[in-house]
Image (cartoon, rainbow, N blue to C red):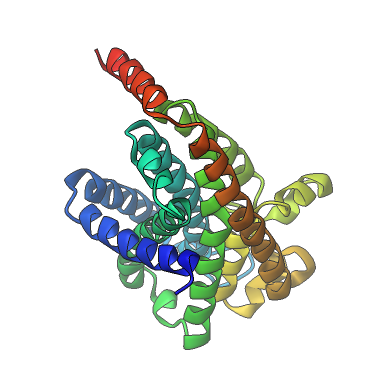
Length: 284
């Protein structure tokens, strides 16, 4: 068997085991539940309002965009945070010592973070089915669109999260490196209000990033075709969604192993121990 393929298979197995361990972590489960409760409360108060000029409930129009945003944030923050921690505790150093270890490590990280992001969406979708009757009427094509947009969106964000995590000086700096830019891009990506209300140059910037296309793809999966009237070009633009998310995924999957490999070559027992001592001083 090809060594790279074998390393990837080991990474798949490792990713699944890490995800199962997450399900036993009270802290991780609490975070999923907390986010779900927060968004469900928002949807609860929006369920009786409708989008102006339509009969679509406000909660139903907002939910897909929230799912797209959470997929993007989950991919970026999940990969960046875990990689920064595992760089500091020596996990990445041990991966470097194994033939094709970086490939296996990155594969495992993609699997575990993707499953965690999917779980986060499920804990919002399940109560959403009870609060929003229109959601339960989604057909097979809608759910299939949800799945391919989600899969491609995670592939478009996870590798870049891994790159950020590998370059971060410490786990404490990851939040600022990921969340602040993500919040800025989210604000102009039509997640919480129609993007056509923004200036043309702002729309152009938003369309260069995956968050806009994740939100658009999720809306196309669940909302009626008439809702596309408030989108750019009055269309769901599936081909453009596929092209942009695919381009980000391809670039990320090419760059991430290179950046991680280069960074891992600079790792040594002494540098890891120095970071560990700094971490202990911060705690102390």
